[in-house]
Amino acid sequence: MNSPLVVLNDVSFQYESQETPALSHISMEVYEGEWLAIVGHNGSGKSTLARLLNGLQFPKEGTITVAGITLSEESIWDIRRQIGMVFQNPDNQFVGTTVQDDVAFGLENNGVAVKIMNERVVDALKKVNMDSFLDQEPHHLSGGQKQRVAIAGVLALRPSIIILDEATSMLDPMGRGEVIETIMSLQKEEKITVISITHDLEEASKANRIIVMNQGEIYREGTPEEIFEMDEELVKLGLDIPFPVKISKKLREKGISLDRHYLTEEELVAELWTSHSKM
Amino acid sequence: MDISLKNVEYRYSADTPFERLAIKDVSIDIPSGSYLAIIGHTGSGKSTVLQHLNALLKPTKGAVVIGSREIKAGRKEKKLKGIREKVGIVFQFPEHQLFEETVEKDICFGPMNFGVSETEAKRRARDAIKQVGLSESILEKSPFDLSGGQMRRVAIAGVLAMEPECIVLDEPTAGLDPRGRKEIMDLFYTLHKERGLATVLVTHSMEDAARYADEIVIMHKGTVLKKGKPLEIFSNPEELLAHGLDVPEVLRFQMKVEKAFNTKFNKTCLTEDELTDVMADFLTGRLPR
Image (cartoon, rainbow over all chains, first blue to last red; front, side, top):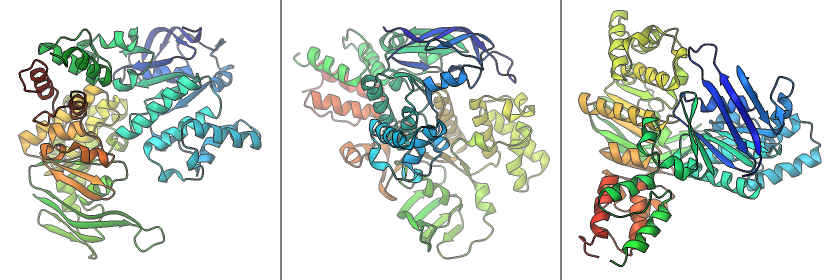
């Protein structure tokens, strides 16, 4: 793994109106270039964690370091330059009247020269495959398309980290697929560090690493394979088991030998074919 | 109370330069006590159909029959309150509509608006809060001090307290974690079974439609593409896929396995158990290849 880009050291946080802390004693690292999925039930603290990372909230205890800068009231703007955030609701984060205006919004706020701005807008929209929609108005776009534009708006600012806070949870299956594919290509081709906060385990299974949150604490950390070995424990935490894992399990119970739980349908079908087709 | 849409067409901003045809020639029957799922992409017209079910929108052509009332295109309709009392709609993210100081007041708002006495409304609030799986002690709290999942339940209780004969759910589980999703879906299924509450579920989830509904309507580009029982709908998955629609993941996986083994199982599987049974029989040679 590369060097840590984000370091959380013993971070705790409590909302004023709440009786219990939203996060307690979180220590974790995010490495450069990785896709980290943070999963957990509603209220597990995962969104609070995202809000702390770019200074929408400040920790009550502990420190957060992003790219070597320690987060504080003074350094917050430097940190926000490093981190781009995409939120849940596609309709709440479309500020422009057209696709290109929307992507340009952040650049304008940062006083980027028009010429550079135009290049960056087109460049960012190409990366999310929305460059043929420059002059479209938001109400002509699907949810998935709007979220891709939101991602482009973040990319245009050239952050080193993108945080997706349940960015696919309001989309239909097709939109969800589009956004997940976009994230995959950004991480692979643009080497952007991705943190996705989600309770969609199909989405999490595509990440490099998963952190499972439960009641404000880190419950488990590992690769998707390791996390999905947790099996029924995930269900107890309010989560679910990915579909191919469920099927692998049931097949085993019904006497079909499989050497492990498979994370993708393709792997499972391939395994069944190789070991069972010539019986 | 039966509801039926008869050749309904709806145009937004009719007779203006912004006119847009949203649905056309839509006919759907929702018999009393049934469970119907309406599926379709964003923009397929599902939400427009939904708003006809309690006369929030009136058809620009055709008619909607709700119980003994007929809402016909081109006619001025009055006194629609009675319809709205009988057909309760739970909109997407219904917790955004909570507004009162206490949960009890919020739940009572609907019934009292329809002329129910305060005592009766309070009785209904106690009843409804239990139906959604929360304790009565929550009635005294401010809805804004509750968790997201609890707020959604309170909002649903507000609709149930109107004691509707039909409940319409627009993506009721959006944004909930897997456990919350299952709890909410089971809750509505129990209400449907135990109280005979007619239920209309508008969803993207082919899985939920297959699991809970008696009948499924598939909307595509403003028209009804298909309607029937879940097994009928999914017995021809290729047709759905050709229209860019999804099929339940169990069935999608069945198709992958069939393709890999160059075979066709003799049944359409909609649950994990059905599929793994058929696969186990096939793989161990109990089923002819």
